Image (cartoon, each protein chain N blue to C red):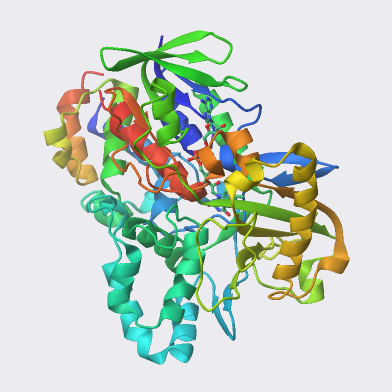
Length: 456
Length: 83
Ligand SMILES: Cc1cc2nc3c(=O)[nH]c(=O)nc-3n(C[C@H](O)[C@H](O)[C@H](O)COP(=O)(O)OP(=O)(O)OC[C@H]3O[C@@H](n4cnc5c(N)ncnc54)[C@H](O)[C@@H]3O)c2cc1C
């Protein structure tokens, strides 16, 4: 009999596990996949290491800063700042037709860019920052449209779209808008805090979490998918695995997603909640030289070619009008990385990809890889002559490896900030609890574990 | 435990929670909140570490005693002197 079973060995499940094992709980993490990490896992292909998700770790703060999510999770996980090995970004940009806004880990740069390009909006931006929801107040008011709030402070539709673009791409589960809580989290974590990357990618962080968890007596089982949550009298008492094995526990903490978790209790339970619609494709291009050698110095470029920035499920397989171009090489490392890489993210349609017969699927991947690279080459120096290897994943890949419905990386549009479910001793953490991204999901796992699994 | 040993025990806990702080400069009469910017989650961790390491229970309405090192040691002394 376990004190707590955790479903999922992604960032949130692992962080929750570290907390519970540290305080001597008998705890077991069950992961369906053979590798840990979930949406931010890793794989090896043709002799190269790839990360599944990692563009950048958000919420970067220099060593010594004591406030904010990064400082909080370091303390909670008993990690020293140096252990994460975070290296700050070189500088990023938001590129729209005829206009570029640059930003880095010092908000003064974005502020001065805005002052130059949108002099009338400078005050409004300051006031908007003052109105952002504090991390500790998240979820006190919900379902407030960020667009409607931002409109009160910023008049220019162009500046509004330019500010929304990175925040949506890195964290909105809502089409063409954001919940104001999410907007506040993302604004702080990207513009006011910043981007960094561990030199060795996501592997180092995952290894650290797994080791810490196991050293404190936690059990981790991979290839152990949970098929069903076992309940009586509105309480869970354990889980049934895909292979029929039954494991009992006093409570269950799930990072599988809100609808996905309710579906494990009762296939009809989640009908009334809407699933997320926002899915993405990602292309990975391995290059024969460093991006800066052909003049590409930006860490991350958020681009859009249209008068209005569209952030919704496209009709076609992929929306080529906008996207995110990330080069893991363009961080301030002390020595160059082994591989030279450009990663591009674009909005995609889950059903369209999911419905393709296998042969077509492979063919469409090749076709869209080319179109996406061409689209991106409008906004960064053309890298296509330097490509020596490629990979690409689609919304189908995400669902296959992480179980998230619709390949929706940021989960369902409505978040469950309390972490509670209709079942007394079943809780949710991670993407659908409210904080997304690597740092966000770590904080989510910690917070929910503290609140419901460690008291008493 | 003597008050000096209790202070050492609390210091060890703080070292664990805040590995990046230099605690040799810690002033015993200034609130932790001010010196180290500890938040409510950190105070909860101090309480849970005390429970884990020394089996001491601290009721929630007594957390307010853990303001400074001085007040913490004073509060813990009757609870820990027989350990
Ligand atoms: C392409 C891409 C790029 C990204 N880029 C960034 C980035 O640059 N920066 C950033 O901060 N974030 C990024 N993210 C987002 C970040 O990866 C996620 O927000 C975060 O990892 C979510 O963690 P989680 O624990 O909530 O969920 P998950 O990682 O999805 O964890 C859930 C786990 O539960 C497992 N599971 C599900 N159902 C079951 C079941 N029934 N039984 C057993 N196990 C189950 C899954 O296999 C999975 O491992 C990116 C994501 C993707 C996909």
